[in-house]
Length: 292
Image (cartoon, rainbow, N blue to C red):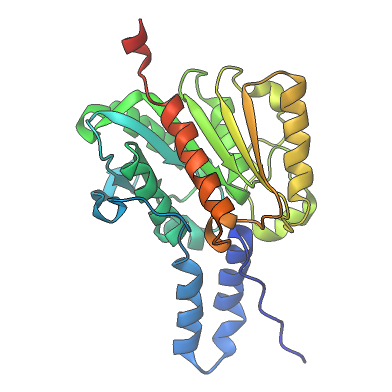
């Protein structure tokens, strides 16, 4: 019987497929060292953009929250309390629930945001929705001790994690978040073709009218995304948001693959990463209390 070909590693969902394949098909290989090398290659991929000082960012690791959860706090290189960006994950598979925050994508973006004056929070979880709500409650309740300005919270979510980020926006009070960045992700309409990735869809049955109308959204689109039906889902969301005049900005990178911030080492990718950081920085810059 012919062996299954290893899936592409071009993109976050593809990286998930690749890791799953490595942990099922690849154990039949005799060379354990080669298998581990391939797993490490997927995990350590980092953003193609760097900022001065990001290698010196303080990271407070393994901070406890909820019922046995932990998070890493990338401490802002600015005065505290600082605006804070929450990475949002949505894959229920327990193998990824513990390991996503350790992937190079999140460690590099955490450092980028901290070097830009914003805290960033990456976390482990067991159940994406309930643990995320517990983490958010913990961050707000312990904001002072953690150096977090709870009035300046933002969301960063990508790929198959975006449906969970949208659900979070829909289920929290409308003034909880000041901004959200949604990168090359499935949105509310997640097709059956995406089920192979193990994506959580907690907002199933909801629609765009359930989103808070005042939260600025930055939707980042990869123009040449080959992930099944992803841009169909994204484009439908964008059209619906425009029809409702929501405060949404669309940033399309022409010709870009899925997860271009990790896999496309180009000036265009670096410019998009800068624009994401600028979007969050500008919208989280001023606490509402300081403008009264």
